[in-house]
Amino acid sequence: MPSAWAASWAHLVPPGGRVLDVAAGRGRHGRWFRARGHPVTLVDIDISGLDDLAADPEAEIVAADLESGPWPFVDRHFEGVVVVNYLWRPLFPNLIDAVAPGGALIYDTFAVGQERYGRPRNPDHLLRDGELLEAVRGRLQVRGYEMGETGGPAIRQRIAAVRAA
Image (tube, rainbow, N blue to C red):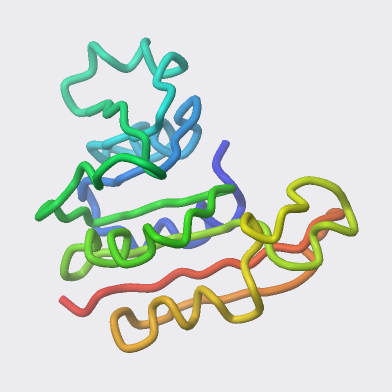
């Protein structure tokens, strides 16, 4: 099951559009979009949890170190870019550039204040107030945004934004 935020904004991804699941882990979001007819690209440093998707011709699996290696999708665009529970600020420009015209960025991760509840506590892994809004300003159109406590003991920042067609 995807994050509630990703599921609630998934309609912004054009039907049948390719979705990039960033820091995919076991592919929770990519699998969910794939089950709904989207071709998917899943990227992570450790792709061992994605072996069962290798036979699916509509699932592209990319092993890449997003924090110290080059961005593996230069000049590629996706109708959906989904990032959940991951933050590496130097990727913001690449993630935004990867959104195709008419496509969407759906981003949901921890924010400052989370350290009161548990991990992550490192400020490098916590979004500052309004940081996602600043990252997309002038580049994508915001459709939804939240910052704060999220129904459980967590502080999160979330954005759903689109690139004009």
